[in-house]
Length: 193
Image (tube, rainbow, N blue to C red):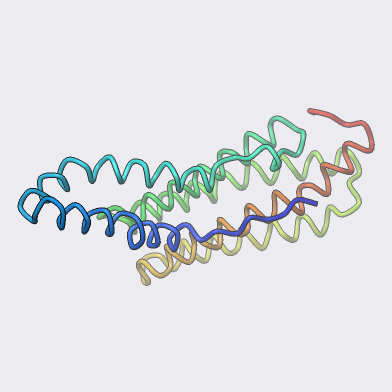
């Protein structure tokens, strides 16, 4: 069974700001002076932000150990991980609630496609723990819908909570629950359906 690497994207982002970007800017200001450091800030900050976001994306990106050995399911999982990163990016924009709502709508739609595909494969191949798996899917569907319903009334808190929930749930689901049916399919000789 895979080990789940738990990481809070927002807290990691804050730590990067606090322990990397801010100290660099302070050192530059001290070394070359405040006026000149403003120019450096204008020129270097976009590059620093790009590097920071690339680092954070790598923490949510697809990892080979997530593979369940079925290409179409792996592609679905990659898409879902990408939507989680989009949620993080949305939280850093001016119209974050609007974009977060759009992403949740997309997640609601895409989880229907993905979960239906997974559940059909399990039914077709006689997966014994299908009811438990479907229950987890239904729990996630309900939680996303709850986040979507609450996003109009509670701003950043709901979006941040949604981001963390989605990240934790998806990575755990892929690395633990989905690996169980992957093992079952492998033992039955079922590959890349």
